[in-house]
Image 1 (cartoon, rainbow, N blue to C red):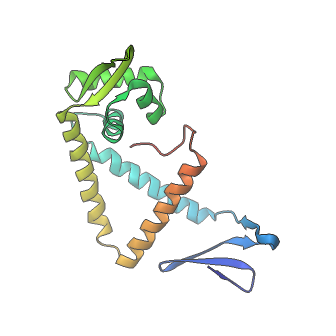
Image 2 (spheres, helix red, strand yellow):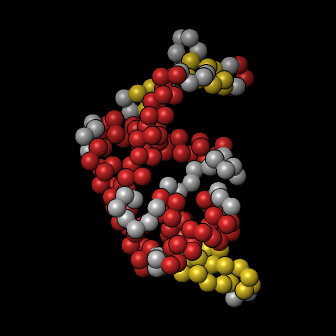
Image 3 (cartoon, rainbow, N blue to C red):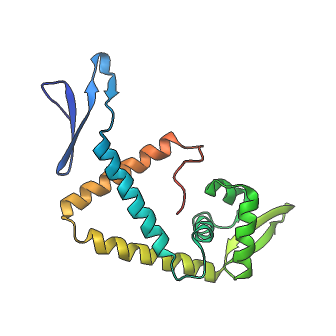
Length: 183
């Protein structure tokens, strides 16, 4: 990080630099507002990535909400329906309806907790794991198709910024319904 003559901090990120922080005395940093054109760029990228997520479940036997539950179970392993509802930021009855359909189609198994038979557990079947694998592979193929056309230095800088964005989103919304969630 370097300090410019105007007192701004420049942070080098690959080919790009960020000078949105104004340095104050006693080490206090004031963050400047993000310009509208940069906000729009992130909004467009968000729509693009959501579109990719939606296309990745096209022509499969599950909907996007059903896939999200499968993805949570893939990440967490055998879980209670309450844990799944919390991970998806939905009410328990929504998980019940999703689980009903996925159980009927053979993508997940319902069970009970041996310590408390009133607790419903959910677990992926082989068919559920196969869907998660197919969707993940489809997403990675589509992302690779686009990312392979970028300059390697720009791609690396973009990845670094996305990792930082993910960390910042997670830290500000740790227990919030707007926290990063499976899609």
